[in-house]
Image 1: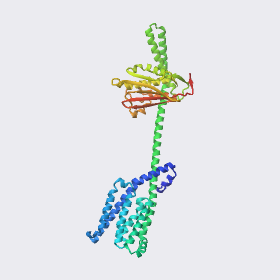
Image 2: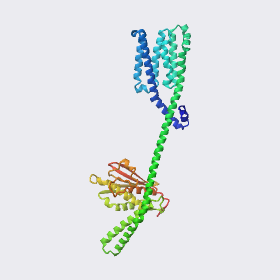
Image 3: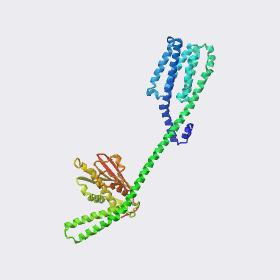
Image 4: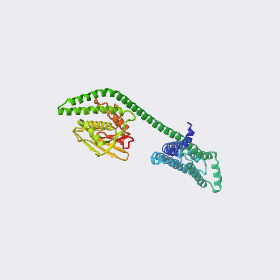
Length: 458
């Protein structure tokens, strides 16, 4: 990448990027380059002035150094101090105008006093020669050159007889040093402005490419996390398929044994217990079957229109033992139906109720423990929100809650599969599961389900 190719590369960018570069260049030149250039210029000017005063003091004696030179040096020192304040420092090239006017005034006063001798103005013309470097502006450089010519014209009229003004002006302006300084200053302004713009263009391009690389890296990290997540789900799918046959056989045997016990039982109370046990055995079978069904990308059976209140009530019955001491507020229309896989969606509610109950256990003795279920809907989506006023979840853990085998609980029996399965079930419904929380205050889980189903079994 060549130094002077920066602007060419910027010109190939979009108009919006080019405008961004112009803002970048304006800020960098104003707040970084020009103040530093001005500092260097002021330092060189002060050093040159002090060296000139020491030379005069050595040659003529300290008492013979012109008093005007002390006044000039004092003003220059004040300008250097003023340049440390932001109000002056970042209003370039204000300080250069002030230094130039101070130098021009005292140089041409000496010019007049010596009857048109060019020697007192040599320092001024050296200062003019690097104005283009300090201001990076051909316009401001030409303005100061014009002001200098006006000073020169007025000082010449005051220094020499009127008949000799034209000759004296010609002599000064054709002096090789003066001519070189007046010509080189705007040329340096053009060159250094372009040089600095190219350097800043390269910096802008590098920063832009670094941002693109950072975004690409973040995208790759997210993609890697998604691939890991998919691998976990695939592992979970294979595990569930392997467990199905191992679990279903003893479950079926248990169901048959319970059915036999029911057929020969004559005690009503025992019959009720057998029915309850049979219902739980059926629930186990349904959970395992649903886990296998929803581990595949596309379920083969159609969704059904199910009453949402009925699904929630079923889930509360299954989790009744965990909800003791908790106020369950269900704000759901009784006639609301949703296209879904009923058994799977019931399992989602069961898992969410269990999680909420676990979060509320530490709050039972301090404040009313509440789980609030509500719905909102529009033409296409039904949002089901389960909110609790439990212990909340740290922000850094929320993103990982739906990862398989990740759990915030230390209990050995908690495998960390509940929310991962819930997310999988919601994904096969064409919906989403989102979690928000305030640590120590509340947690809110929102299920977004589409209301338009391509296949619904009634």
